Amino acid sequence: MTETPETKAPFRSGFVAIAGAPNVGKSTLLNRVLGEKISITSKRPQTTRNRILGILHRPDAQLVFIDTPGVHRPSGELNRRIVATALTALGEADLVLVMVDAVKPDPEAEKLVLSHLKKSGLPAVLAINKIDRLPDKRALLVLIDQWAQRGRFREIVPISALDGTQVDRLVEVMVSLLPQGPPFYPEDSLTDLPQRFIVAEMIREKVFRLTGQEIPYASAVTIEHFERSETRNLVEIHAKIHVERDSQKGIIIGKGGAKLKEIGQAARRDIQRLLQAKVYLKLFVRVQKNWSRDTRALRRFGYE
Ligand SMILES: Nc1nc2c(ncn2[C@@H]2O[C@H](COP(=O)(O)OP(=O)(O)OP(=O)(O)O)[C@@H](O)[C@H]2O)c(=O)[nH]1
Ligand SMILES: [Mg+2]
Image (cartoon, rainbow, N blue to C red; front, side, top):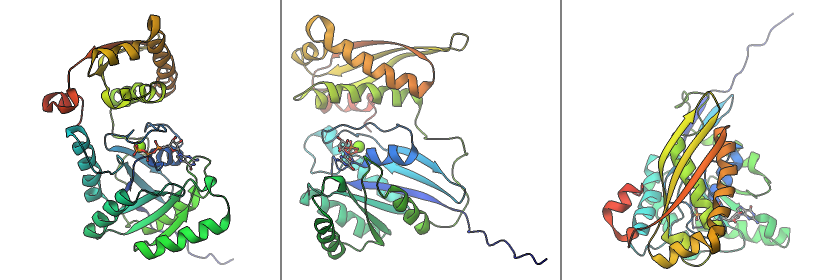
């Protein structure tokens, strides 16, 4: 009996920055790839405000994804910091995953991303997302053709982050483009973010999803108290939702406290799943005038 030597593919690892216009589905893709929700999503643009790191472990590779805020022309101090966060992430990456919306182009943001990509000299893959919304295959072929002319992508992969179409294929492509090398993070780690941060994000997501008008953009969340009782598998959390005006506080609290209750209940469900424990969540609303323009407040709320 002859034995053939094992031809094992070399282990690959690296950082993948997910970059694109606001609302194209970057965070949805990250959650889909990880099979866990660590990055918040909403139908509104500018949901993500920080660099969100998520680690995918495979037998042959480790992909460290950096989900970034959507790139746009910033107005105001908060937005300026948010966009800077996104563009800085490019500097950390081995590979850039550019994401675009198949049905809603954003020429200004796309131009900005492409020009930074070019400056970085990094290899890039393009994901054309939301193809579930395209009328037919022909429309997709036209899009692929247009994008092939616009940028120098190693590969263009049409996907649907929402229903998972072609996401596996996209991951395979990215693995093949990563450098060879050992993993960066231990096998059981999903993110480098503290649990408290993700908890605050989950509350912010409910504010994004359950309130309208200017409220989402005028709010930030901080965790004031976080205590785990191991004996009872219970976590007690007190969080503050900061808004800029009394009128906004009124909207968040709602008639007889109904809106705040709704936000709390929805957030609690997500947080319980994340922490694998029963959660006692208490929410407070605080008015801090013009926090989004106040350097100290921005830093305290985590927007460096
Ligand atoms: N139909 C469809 N909707 C999608 C798909 N992927 C994401 N979405 C939706 O698009 C919206 C924006 O998704 P997000 O993941 O928050 O987008 P993002 O790029 O992270 O946005 P920012 O953080 O604001 O930059 C949400 O309502 C998602 O459900 C997709 O493949 N198909
Ligand atoms: Mg996002």
